[in-house]
Image (cartoon, rainbow, N blue to C red; front, side, top):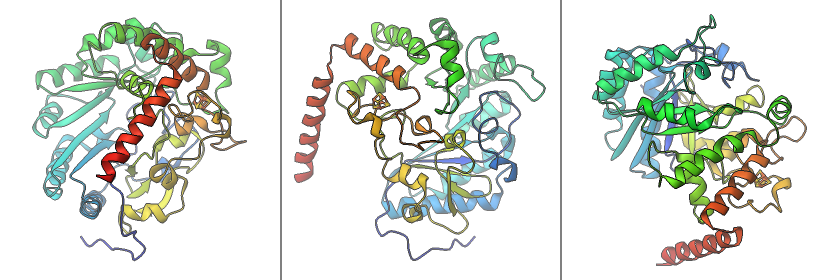
Length: 402
Ligand code: SF4
């Protein structure tokens, strides 16, 4: 299909490492904390339930054009939703084949899917294995913990169907990892043991999505630092075991930052995110968790049927700023000891109706506690982190000078 170009595309577009394809805008579950359906945004109601073939192909063409324009040799595509398995295994299989063939000029193409796991059967597992798809499944903990929140539209828990699906993945030789939303007050070590025992290759612990307008109830119930209280015992176990067990990106990232490196995850660092979302109708959008802040926060006004991804830079949208540059440091972070490591925290968690994104993270006290603990355990002061960062910057500058 033809893809129109526009004359205002920047001459030197920057690479995007990841394109998140929201191939389904509905879900068979109705998790109570879901940022897509149960927070401040309802734009999903006006989207097609499933991405059309035309939109999918237009997305691939735009990605191909973007990779050619930037010269990038590596790209990741993540199938996301809603629940992406709602497209069905045959269509998903065909889309994976098309993605690999249309992006054949890109040396390294990685495919992934983030699914609630309830619909995975032997057919799906075989499709994932054959297309070399990296699978992320949402598992919050043991059955009771998981089923407290991750329920279907009739309120029934999803744990048993997920565990069945994980068995199918294992039987097909598919490597999979877990997204687990932190629930304050729970025993983190037993939850982690359970997830590791299921066979997860990695565990991404997700901080609960709140803004300054919604956090009061959590604080009243669980105290000042409920997420740090959850993560610190896990960090200690991770450190003492030398990182044994499932890979935990959160802790590698904290350790990397404390040791003077750059953040590899948007939880910290306020780096340009350099990844974009494509909705089922082809809309190009920014970070989808911005939905917790208000209606349409991630909109860019662009879509894959008429726009190149490079046009984002000139869109003037909030998402463009987050993707291309990172937002200004919140004024309340200016004198913080972790201003160069945390740098304000995850953007949606900075939001309040009163101050927009100009506030420290709603999890600020937790971040300070976690970093202070990591520093004490690793024997690295903030001054040492700063010295290492300066040294790294000098070495990078020297390499750039040749
Ligand atoms: S720890 Fe708090 S004050 Fe410090 S940079 Fe992070 S959000 Fe800002």
